[in-house]
Image 1 (cartoon, helix red, strand yellow):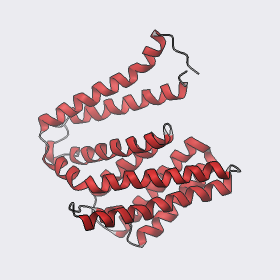
Image 2 (cartoon, rainbow, N blue to C red; image 1 turned 90 degrees about the vertical axis):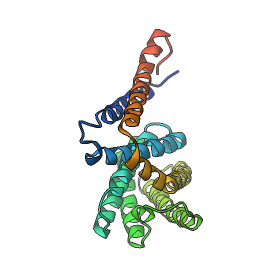
Image 3 (cartoon, helix red, strand yellow; image 1 turned 90 degrees about the horizontal axis):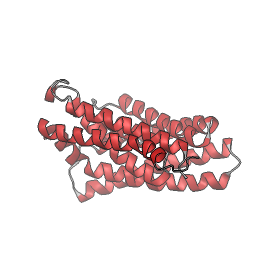
Length: 243
């Protein structure tokens, strides 16, 4: 039996793929290399990677919300001027993304407290020089990768602690929230380390990828979106149970 919520999320994900594909195909209309597509390319790539990790770890709705939000923020942040105030702003925005994803999973009270705690904790660790932007653009050097792994471990642990606090304040299911926090720490670390380690290659690709190749990527994304959206119709055609 397929959940109606799952079908709805598949439709939303399909629309997102179509939107991104259309942006890639509209490369020239968006100003080519001087337009905003470099940032869009970067943000879309990171969003896909984060979404894959978080969806594998938590399924819907938490995975797509957290993954898409964190990846988009990272792509935008890498394109901004460095500065403590800007970094702290992105720390708060990351907390808001986690809060929104937590709201979809455990309700409004948990999401609100989780988001506030995550934002506050990330601001604190960012001020201790563990911000995401400090990892970029780092060469693929073993020492650099160790530093990225340690910094991501601090950030992942901070978010997991925020989840535990939110669960203690708003929920009586301490065991469930504790398991959620452990999974969140592991998935956040894996996703952050994977993206942080591959960031130089992604940035170089976003700078140099030819317009024709972007068009191919756009066409593939649109086809993927159409196939994803068509699942709801195949369910009806084959009379599959929907709950």
